[in-house]
Length: 198
Picture 1 (cartoon, helix red, strand yellow):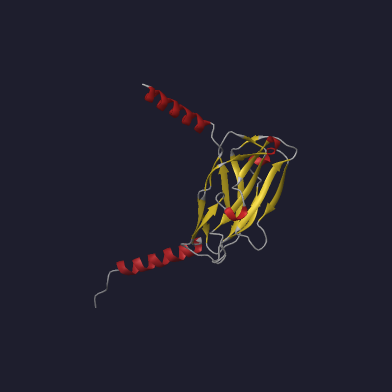
Picture 2: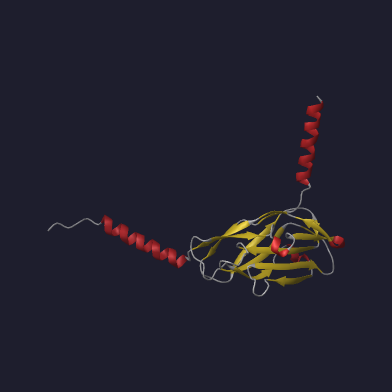
């Protein structure tokens, strides 16, 4: 009896914790065109916590610098939850280390919004990278640049997010796919033509 009571209590606490959990950021897998600058990745957040800002720490690739990696071109906090009021944005990709980005956004004057919706848009350059390559896109676990990405709450407090890191996958540009498809159709057409008798 006591054992089932304890089990029920633990289950209730866990379920209550899920309902009141941290904002959730699932970075996801994003397919970007090969060998092309100016490609965007949209990162969304779900949650109900009230926040007044966000500190973004992100990395593309392994961050070790031994091998080439795609780079961040810019960070944009417009078009989502930050449009609820005037805000200040600081930071971006550091010169010479563009596989990293450190940026922050904060409402000015201070106000709160729910941590839900479009969080940030990242612009990435895949120049020099081709079909089949993939790279981690991290917002947490980046020891080289400090803390995980996190929200700012009223009174300059911080709120950790439940972050699932993601990946970018390099895919062929549509023109390359069209050429491959036409070549395949030509080969198929050549195979299916009836032979003429002589």
